[in-house]
Image (cartoon, rainbow, N blue to C red; front, side, top):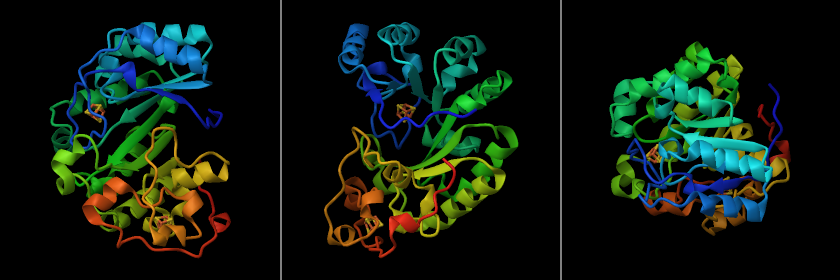
Length: 303
Ligand code: SF4
Ligand code: SF4
């Protein structure tokens, strides 16, 4: 299925207020404060965006008003709606059927194919429910609506290549695999180096995962990882794709980078997430390396 590239979308972080998991890397944990549905509807009415992403501060599918919210947003004229979810609630086929017809994309936070790792990183015992959700989506032949968000953390990075094998063997038709580097924010601040790895230790595993994705014909991107930390694989970078399409590299809500000389001297900076403040608080900026490579010379991978 071909889908149009969406440059900007309105992220509704008020779509949820609690969560059924407790991910160690959660950078935007739930507040427990429920916003009235009118708050969301007014926000969408004011902006009249082309696309809305329901997400943030918890799990949208734990919100009992979620279907009502989607229908109200559609009444305003928004055509494209996606939900960021951990999918656990979609182990219930009836719930899945109601949700799937209302959205263009399910952006599924799925941190590991290994039960022990999944349960550890999410501080839960819900691995089997999350897998059942993917199986349910597959049964409905709706995997093309799924973007897998695989947050790279200390607990899963050594299994990145195997994760791609697992996706290829079981859920090959997913729309996209997004390897997003965990942020040192929110709940992650409690775990720090225990949950945030170093770019340099992740590199060889990430390269393998990207090479396998390409080999299997599964679209993949990296996100929140500097271009100098994925040498030879820069064409997979989400920020690079945004740059070459003429979009702002930093989506709304993403913190601006740290101003350092290495980045200001670097020819790749406009197409790169650059030095991240949260990451550098843990590991500094020694790993980063200024480049003379022109971003125009980077060959984009499928996106
Ligand atoms: S990352 Fe998402 S699924 Fe995990 S605890 Fe945070 S809100 Fe819940
Ligand atoms: S030096 Fe900075 S701008 Fe250049 S690739 Fe590395 S992080 Fe990006």
